[in-house]
Image 1 (cartoon, rainbow, N blue to C red):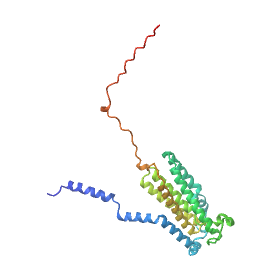
Image 2: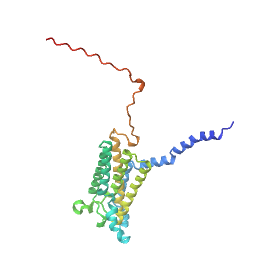
Image 3: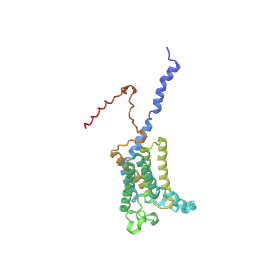
Image 4: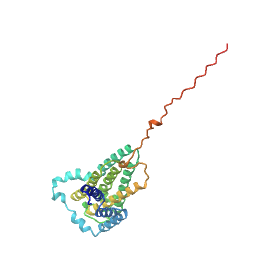
Length: 284
């Protein structure tokens, strides 16, 4: 006897649901590839590779892209880009945003952990980028010399320590750790978190375009800055995973309350107080 239509639909429904919720093979492979490409060993090798190319083989590319773009293209926009767009990835903007967010999350969850993670990301950016800038001592494009070790903080100030770009590193590391904190300590939806991650990428792209437009950095400075920011971001996440935490994620936090005592278990017999003893009469 053939199955009725409603029976067939009932049998096929779970299969369709499983197929809908089961991640596709291509999506799993893409996620695995992205995780591999952003791992610490790969990022370290990529930073070394870019640094080697920036030391000489890519000087032609750096010089070709270092043009007076702000004089050729929309010169009336230069002040707006310099005063509004370029500072988006500066410490003057991102540090207050990250610090206030981490402080609010710390107060809400009664833990120093969000502030500690934000401080670790900032220390990582300042320490790693600052050390590379001082050691490599690359002059700014305004000095028209992309060679390593031809600059210096004492001889040329900020114009002599330009590699890698601090703005580029901060756009990835600090805005990225901001999204990380929101994902772990708030109930922000996955769709919103994905949009925020895309926003981090947009900020990084805008930082690169504005820096080249204004002539503040060589192109390889920015590429190395993005990789350095990724290294700091990944290292901060590893640092967070190494620290034991008593506070679970906000999206999976559960609360427990004491179970009420059943009415039948309550005693209905009142305990009578013993009769007070008659006080002894005083003998006169």
